[in-house]
Image 1 (cartoon, one colour):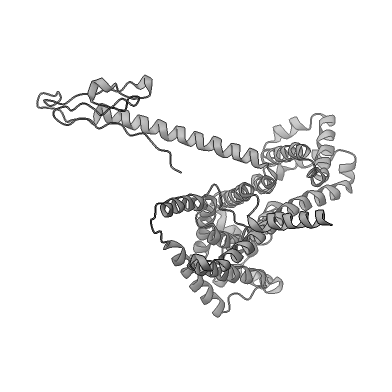
Image 2 (cartoon, rainbow, N blue to C red; image 1 turned 60 degrees about the vertical axis):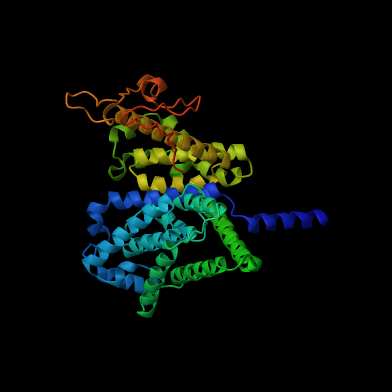
Length: 454
């Protein structure tokens, strides 16, 4: 009994003390935001036919359908062209800012509004990837997905460093942003526009009030920190619960897809993969489809392998190595579907859902590799700029075309990384740290060591 109580207490502490899966939540934030942003950019020339007020699914038909199912969409607040363009551009902008991790708490709500507004405007447009994105945009509102790999995380590090130095840091952007959002939400509510089902209005008002309480609790003195601790615990529980729901949703998608496939006769005889590869609508590369279906054995193996991977994946979560193998197989499968069947956004949505199962060590390694690559790029650019400045940005030429009296010309050694010789122009030796020798005229300042941005 004591062991059981200890295990329960440890589990409660783990769930409430900190948000779990910071890298996983960050990578699914980036994945879903990138998927929706690329879709909006790809369909920008066709946006009128898909979601416009004069599209095939007219504004009147959409209004009638929404009146029956109670779905939320901001596009039905007005049938004007200007309002449509504002909503479409706002959805793209919210996706970009969420991808970058700027004010993620606000952007998750606006991202949800953009996805639901466009998808519920024309419910007969899209595929299974849209359904996945529809669900995940709701779950992302509950997550703390800006802990790493975001502009919010960088701002938090800089704020902590400034406070450690004794500086006072004041955030003005956040209150202004939420003030504007609160006024808009209040105006929409009072005007009766939020007459859809209760889910979306409750999420928007709940997020707004929760953020207001968080801001007020942050202004309390340290000896009255209990409200902040309570709010932090609630936020951690919501984040961890949402992450669990996202995992369960992905497992449910694969399990149901696999079990429904088993009931089909074409999946039972091993020929199901052959037919979509020869449909004109799903054959952007007919020659590639013919090549893949040239072997009946290969078609049978792919058909049975697809069913096996989808059914086995939820059970594979009990073993880390098996899970990683099946995860790699599913990501590869979706990548092949994107190319062979011409369904890139469906595949991107499913891959984004799969990324929640990636190991933390692997994601950290990817982050370190990206940081090293970025630092190398910035370092190379700094060296090239410094070399260009030393070649052509030194003292101005004298009247005869040469340097002025007393000026020293410095030519960097590009083979050694662009660092000039200390003896040639008063540039300090990095190894010795000695100051440059004084020269008449305008000496060239020592090169600064480039620092990669955090």
